[in-house]
Length: 281
Image 1 (cartoon, one colour):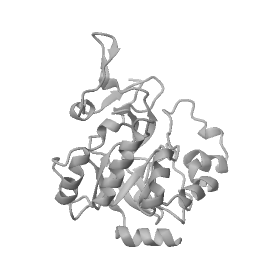
Image 2: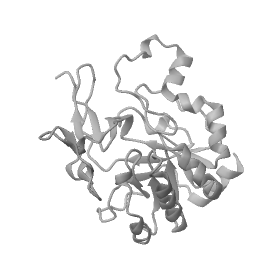
Image 3: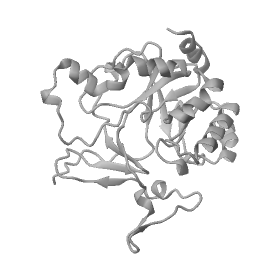
């Protein structure tokens, strides 16, 4: 185990298989079963918490592990998101999930040991399931199909050099054992796999005018209305649109006893998953 990972374990105070919940507002009711709370978004800057609320959230949930998830950043956004991440960690937030290489390079010098590589940074977009090649793959190809980035030693070495101590993954469509990631701890998204990221937010489309609206400050339409279910011929279950994230229910794709010891945290979403309805019906 690397010295950095050992320090991360000491800092985090790891419990075996902690349960962490993704939340949006600090005013949401949170019961006592959750070890940690996760704010922010992998896909949308508008779903980040207000910077002025970071201290209040930290004070309100003083005993819980707090994670700030950050999205891909455009050139006009990266400075503000980096400042928010700096502020959160200064205030005692425990971890920042990074999905943008530019943001990672900005944070690495100061915050090595408190950064997690998100699913987008690891290129773990699973795709919608059409044209699944699984049956035609041999054993080695199947392992790479399920966990390709985790076999990329060059990628993992760069992440380690930049101070990343944790990886976020989700269940593949066909289960294969996770490869060893000795220098990293692993967070596991337990109820939904990331399929893709939409280019635009569907909540900003105005069908009456057939145009895309500019979002108002604090616009959280997707969180207020709940997820959209998308059905398509050939898919075994609906896709779930949540902000710009396109997800698929995956709680039945894994068993806790199959997770290696490096997985010490399971992340759950804050919306009801809508089952496994056959998309052809």
